[in-house]
Structures are given as C-alpha cells and as structure tokens.
Length: 128
Image (cartoon, rainbow, N blue to C red; front, top):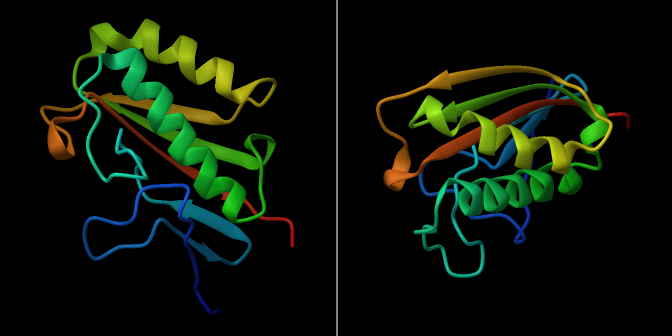
C-alpha cells in the first residue's frame, strides 16, 4: 500500500510538513485548502465570498492534479470561522460542484490558519 503524494503548482504549496493530497488505496485525501494565492503565497484579505472562491479554485486544482473531478468527490469538510457565513459559502460551493453531491460536514471553528474565514478538504475516489 504505497502512498502517492499529489502536487500541483496551480494550488498553494504546503506551508508546513504535509502534502497537498495523498492517494492511497484508490482514494485521494486532500489537505485543507485556505484562501492562499498559489502564485504569491499570500492570504486573501477579501470577504468570505472571495475567500471561498479561492478555496474552491485551490481544491479543484488538487483534485484535478490527481486525475479526478468533483463528480468523484465522496466527502468534504467545510470549516468556517463564523457559521453566519454559511449561506454565502454554500452558494459558492454549490456553484463549483455543479451536479456533484458529495457528503459534507460543516463545522464552526474558533480560528483557521493565517486568519482565514473558510477552509475545505475532500476525500475523493480515484478511478485509475
């Protein structure tokens, strides 16, 4: 059971000792994505809508680098700094998913890395 590490330059580089994603036994486990600009490594200072757009773009880049699509996503976890932002995050998230309907958990947390407002990770079936 060898681990395959996923890396793409179209998502932010890891800011610690972890991988953007790891594939094991036909499943991709992504790192949580926050609103880091992959080109600059800088955190977005925008509102929750802008940050969620960037998070979804980053997460999509990791999923794509593993050879998958949102239709292959089995589960996501959404971490919010403020649950009052849920309707906005849900709207952006739904637009990026299209017809995909993975299972999802949404959790309010007291803080996120780099002062982010939203973080999302995914578990994805890899059909290789």
